Length: 232
Image 1: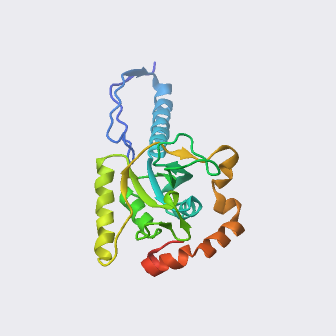
Image 2: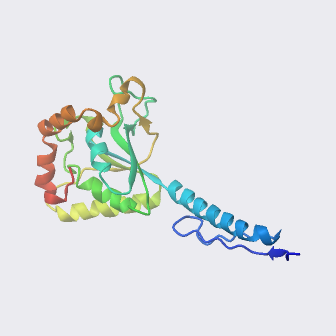
Image 3: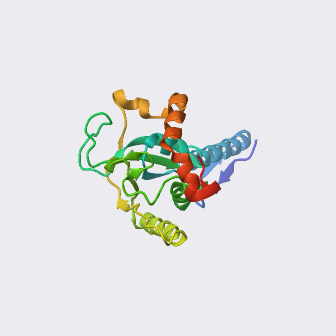
């Protein structure tokens, strides 16, 4: 007769996830034939659980930098960014639309990113070198309130980081005025429905997008300010 094995404690360490260090305690009685199968099953479960929790760990940032087509394009090139959605934020009007009323809102993007790959500071560092922080009328060829640049922060930690990165820009350009404000987050309204063609516009309409960007002078102005640090 084969012996009965009693497993009093199973420790699963999940590195690289928010559950790292958790201890799962089980008391099981298994026979000789079940022992190896159970060990293999538990190991597989631990790997799957670790992968799931790691994949689910993302953060969001909301930024306005003029034309959201361009912001979407610039941020989807950044390592660690999972998704970028174009939309509106910052105003009181509910459900703003592109062709209708979006008064009081900024054209903005909502960036979903993996904080284990790129930090919030990294997101903002990338933001600064892809906007004109001195333009008080809009961004590049696009003028008007909806094209102004802004950083939207969700908490005090983000505000502190945003202020630090802004101060670094101020220090780098002492003879210019950095006009990009740091604002509290408000409802973000993704472009949707009949206007959803604005999402991934640079991918779906590359000729029109590149022509617009060139005529707008965005890249030449970015190079004037940031040199080879810009990433268009």
